Image (cartoon, rainbow, N blue to C red; front, side):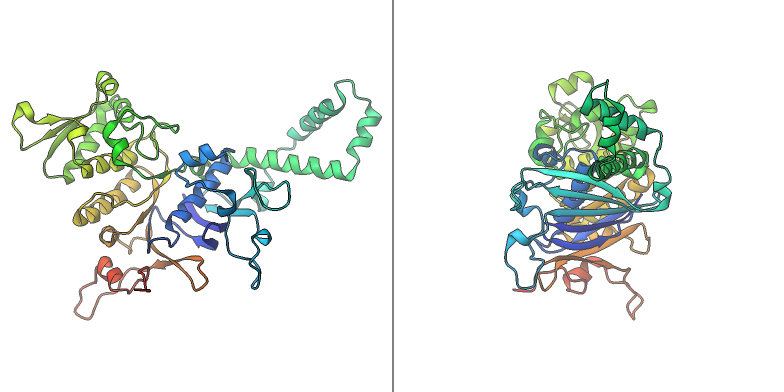
Length: 416
């Protein structure tokens, strides 16, 4: 599981450390940087997968903009307003339970003219610690040298010419760098936490994608806006014992009117139709499809599928969890998702603006964590972890939503 994430030089973030639990909630005012935290993690995921082109970044849920505005716009010098002086490298460090040492991603805005007018991004994975370094595979190095020699001089390279070439300091440094990069990537990629990070997505489901079911995303099986949901439900129909269908219907009982849903057959999937049964309607009209369903049902269907499916990522984020949901339902949804995360070995980060979400957290459980996100006096995004509230003199404990709205936790606008 991911235990700590350090972010430097990304959008509104100058330097920030987040220690996520199994479930982590970020709350704060609009523009405080909640989504930027998620996007920085997704940037490291894209770098880990070596897919940093704009199209792939967008499909991960990152708001792609001009490269100048992806790195921090804060001047590194107290009296400098010159953006050309700003560091072009995004740095993200991750610590995980299965890693003996931190792993670092450096994502560089390429600037061939030296003026930080980027032509794209390139990512480099770094690490530290004797445990990982000791695992670097020596046998690969001679093969690398041979391939380099054949590339430069052909298969019949003169041995003296090759020796002279390899003894140049610049070539030695280049070879060492290539060797280290290749071997570290090969070793680090075997760690489960790195694999989990590579699959990290920021989900922001949208009503149109959830209701139509026709659009499919570039990322399988479930796109960040909900694309591919029907096909995922259809493929889950064939799980042994149909446990997925039973679990999904059990969770959807949060809606008092719902009797059940019928996982789509192949024909239903082709037609783009999901059967939904309302317990209060007469039999011949009781089953309708997603086009007639209310928006809240569609969002719950998405969230529960995301947490229950074995095909969805083990580590992901949901931006604005509370969309289209009743406040009391928000609290119960949060309680339910924390349980599903534990049962299905998922790790999730949520952002929200609705304090009702907070009432579903149990901060006495260290696996559930709440951070208030705000801008400091210089406009930089910072986070503050919230501890479990203490009982009041009357023995009762203030609800987190009440504490937030009263201003006790911070994260509320203060300029009006």
